[in-house]
Length: 249
Image (tube, rainbow, N blue to C red; front, top):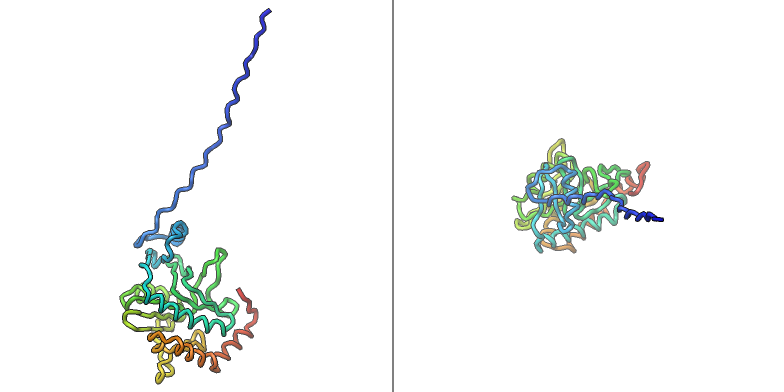
């Protein structure tokens, strides 16, 4: 008798769909014209770039930072840091990305802002960026030819950044404007005999521009301490502290 033995068929492997590898975003290049979303997508994919901005829909990537720029930057940070320490609900940020509008994502050298609960017009987004116009922006520029005094100035003015200051390192000049009726008006030294500029957005924030430009931090902070001891700073702090619904971010 013949017995037929059936050879078991080999089990065929289950074919699973292969997920396509997400395409890497194109590189971020100076002069590119991008939307805010595409700019942020490309910027996030290039962590080696420390600073990039979208100004009126155009990508700007600044050159490496010179020692003179870094020195000026550190003086501004120290000056504003002391003011922040003495004033509640005021936040200081260094090179933070700020979403101003769909065509402008900027990264100011330094900014000072009020918390929303204290009347500030900017806030922190769910993904940890600043959205809206800070009350004060300070940029350190090489000279008056820099885009800080042209394209960025117009963007800040249109978005109603209340005060804007630019230190032009090579020219030894510092300009400070305040927003008024759609224009930037230069701050007049209230105490002209001593060359002191005084902020209106942040009462008590006094700047001895001559000392700052000379790199004299001690004299700069001494003048600031006078501002912090002034009646206007005391009134500002009292107003912030008593603001209904004031909360910290």
